[in-house]
Length: 117
Image (cartoon, rainbow, N blue to C red; front, side, top):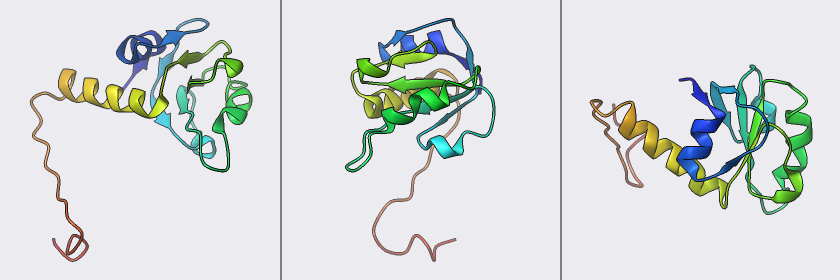
């Protein structure tokens, strides 16, 4: 699914920096960036602040980043208040706008999911 950076900023009430570009994939691990047009969603962990990888990610001209720390803003970023909540908003919007006619089923619980077919 192709999205534009401006559309992601609109969906998340974020602020886009730089020129608009396409986003084909969104990843939360910078090591998963294999393709062009990939957005790195920066999540601050207990031991590592993923914002420190933003500069390396943005060296690829067609990549972008979803960030929440103003100190790391560069062209190709969308800054939001909370990246985790922004990812949830993007998912919700895509689910309702694009896949409204698709039935979604979830199997939950703590026992039996692995052995159930």
